[in-house]
Image 1: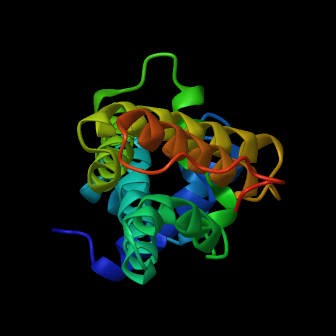
Image 2: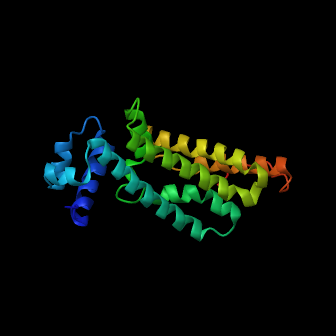
Image 3: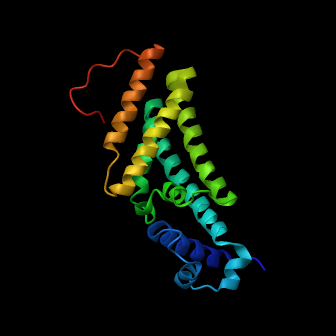
Length: 204
């Protein structure tokens, strides 16, 4: 018998709350079951292992994050804004109920020396999504150099998220400024834009 959608939601809510705040290794499955109010038999109908539950919670989080990112891109006024919309999305996501637990993906990767295949697949998916979307958004701005810029921005975003693990209240201003400077540098080298004036202060 398949798990009921409402039961599955409660289970994933509990898993996300506990795994990504207390830590995966520090959270026994029984604690998740107690928080969700479901039995172990119900759990194993849908998820054969703790790792499968971790992967499902990450997968749902990935989908929620993409929805927030899409909404930020949709409100951008130009190609530059669509590229930098990732930072608007990060700001917006942190205001959601689960946003304070970001970045669950980096935290999960740090917990596993050798992640199980189902968990690693979701971690790889999240990294791939970031890389692909940043690169695609860079194409209208820098053309053939989009791959290089995408990799640079992936590092900026990942570095910002890593710092959030140390400083939960950290905003995106500095990361956005670094990304803007990288974009300006690439467009100048590519000859796709006039050389930017030397900024008088931090860029926004």
